[in-house]
Image 1: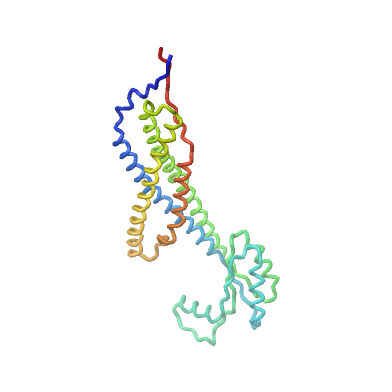
Image 2: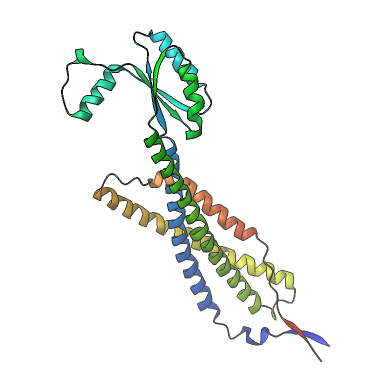
Length: 283
């Protein structure tokens, strides 16, 4: 009695070179598309961060508060839970902005505004606690919270978070699976082609994985470089059309994108490959 592999009958009939070329091209194209979705994900995450940074409300100082008291109040507010940043606005600066917005000239002597603070916070849930502390501060005259603006920003933030999850789950993960399956298939075909040549099954499996590691790394590198060139080209064209497009530059994008791609490739290379070959007994 002896064992033999059924698949070995057809091993020599496989167009090895053609299959490897096709797999390499497929993985390269997949990495180009994957880079696009990763870049989209990072841009949306950046929008999430930018949107969170725009949560703010204002607080007016009492009239004739000393500068030292203003600085002390500013430091106290910075220590409150939920406060991210505080910016002092003099009544002169606020008056100039008001005139610019209204597009009219008003004499400085008629400036009705007070010195104020713009208080940036992390989340709408932080407003109540911050507001209570400000209302108990004798240097603060009044707090102005624009509920409509904050509600709009909160909806915008939720939209970007949902969008980022959709990109990750619907686009990025399936592409990673497809790339891995292509990589796994190339290893399997290479393994099958050498079943009758290399008798040691473990050595054959290890060799097949090692041989196909280079095409995976090369396709990821080539796909990434091609994508970066496409990204720069289209970003420049979008900015030429309108400067209002908020798209990360390559310098802002390249580090995180490279880290994510390296992590994906390394995990694929480290994942054990279990290839099962159908065998039967022959008398």
